[in-house]
Image 1: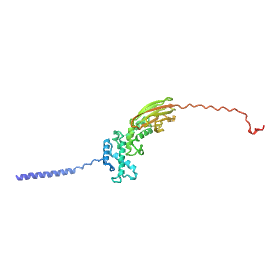
Image 2: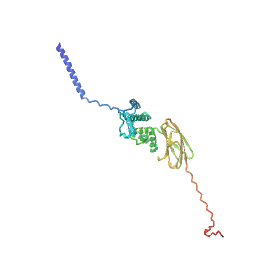
Image 3: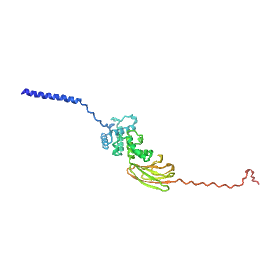
Image 4: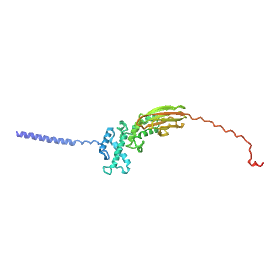
Length: 317
């Protein structure tokens, strides 16, 4: 009996050894799994770790790309401290005030990003110029001058970008916000056409959405000047362009302007509402024909008198 038991034990040990040998060879022949890309760590070290975690949670809830947002704050911070030579604040005690500035900038930029609708926020970090070029071409086909479109987009970017990085030449990562603002403002903008009548006022009331704009095209009879007046809320501003995109009335409060016949037709008026609520504007326009030329009467001939020679005049006579 003992020989049988010994044979069974030996078989079990031999089978186990062979199994471990084959398993080790099989696992060694497989390639090591590729580690997944990890999200970028928040940089620099936070002055308040709990607040930093809350910031990252808000980014996730808003569906904002974490890497893009952190690079945005980094770029903004570095532009404030050019003497750092591209070095972000460290975890040292001396850099504590600098880390606080970074945290404050992050809150400011997040407040700007939150103004965008979810469909725009989700694409930040992936937007390209071509994404809004199609919408721009639609306006051009509707006879909106490119300079008017530029003013329209610049007004939208004003709420998202600080003054030193506004404009179509804004570089990354700021340009993502510029493109997002351009797409949001251009899409669905209201364009109204009004015909100015000679000697008679045309009045129209229009609603401007909150943080939005309205573009008004005024057709002017050939050879006439235009008197244009707009009333609305104090948070509205107007800019007037001629038919060739020439600036006729700079951006400013709603007011009355008189435009010469050289302004051409149509005249394009851009009204921007910076308020948090929509508002109604009232536009009044009138075309005035050129004044009739009044013929100046010729001066009457002076009566001819006797010419006297002063040299021949003798007061003693």
